View 1 (cartoon, one colour):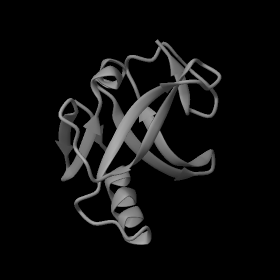
View 2 (cartoon, rainbow, N blue to C red):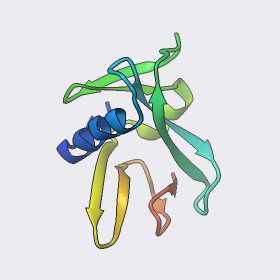
View 3 (cartoon, one colour):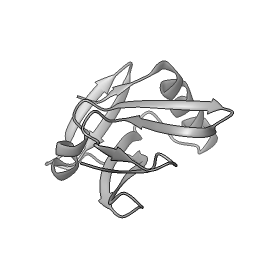
View 4 (cartoon, one colour):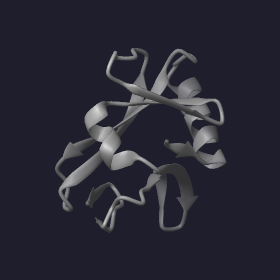
Length: 108
């Protein structure tokens, strides 16, 4: 399961409007190799659900995750911050043993 905070839900809704997306565009979260810690998060809109995708829904937000990425993302909370330390989506991932300073990459 992947959860979404209220702030992340609000920002996703705002981005849908800004980018001219519809409710058909779900959030796709995946993990790719790279970054300073070895693995990077990838987040974007996607209007296609692949047969192998796992689909989670929290607070009305549908989240699509491919099978490979699911192992790294189970239990993750997607948050959004706009504080002094930076602005953007953050992944609170209980599986990460190390994260980089920017929060965009991690290792397990």
